[in-house]
Image (cartoon, rainbow, N blue to C red; front, side, top):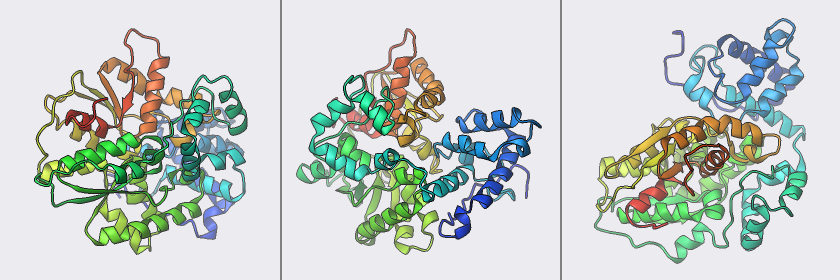
Length: 448
């Protein structure tokens, strides 16, 4: 084995059904082994708050070594991990196939799985990740739900903070009375059957966020693909389970994977591509599900058929060529590459896509936003999330572009909020976008 693990990183299956997976003694032993390697390396010191917490524990211990750290304090390191995968994908020289086989994010996941099995999660934490139920209920009373969740609401946000542990300062997603799937079925955009990609068929996996919170992303993707001749349908059997993965509920993730894979299997058999509209969900379908259910044939076929939306547009551009009609985006774009897009190991597809526009002006930011899904809105995490994301917000202000975009809609909002909290002469843009929304705008398909 060459020093530094120069081979591409590989991941082992998540052996969550093995009784040893949840064994606290074995987990602590593996944590000690990995933490000792991290202590000797420290290459990840600036990625997130997990590593500074770990190194502070070691440096402040009696001996300055991992042996002297109280194993009860390991939890502090786990609590700061957002499962962004950037240590595994971009920093760690000891990931598999290196013989030390360090997979820090999946070790944090294993610790959380043990916590979940032991019932350590609060009631409010468990309710926060019920995205399908919450989306359907809030959508039915969308104006009221959006009023109640509005930042600065003095009546409701303090109550939410006390009961649900959601920081009153955190921007929260809005809800819509009509889901993206319902909109796509009621008013699909006109398809250009003479466009270069007319032989393609794409099923848009709506994702819980696009379906309930930001249908505009789905509408933009639908419009762009239809302009390029792709036959498009939208579907949403169920959430991908990423929120449950963050909490260590692997049985629930497996349940979601089986249901979604079975629902989409007939379209895959008919030759349809599956296009996920947010990178976290694409990552689940492509990589996490096959590691959780490695023997499930439907999950394997789904993983092989899945594209991220930016990846899919770039693939059309390379293989068939794009339909004409794209115009420049005056003022340029400050583009944050989402961690879960980078973790797909497909290259910077959002940047590639936006550079297909005439006169492209794209300033790329490759660093974690700090949000971490539902993690970043919790009271105990919000200040840490802002701290981790501060370099991104600062760079976005320095770029001074007309548009701010991120493949992760939650990250985009978080970055924008971070920009607004920084004092400076440069003012942040009034809104943040998904790159596919800007691509649709360049086609004249979306105006605002």
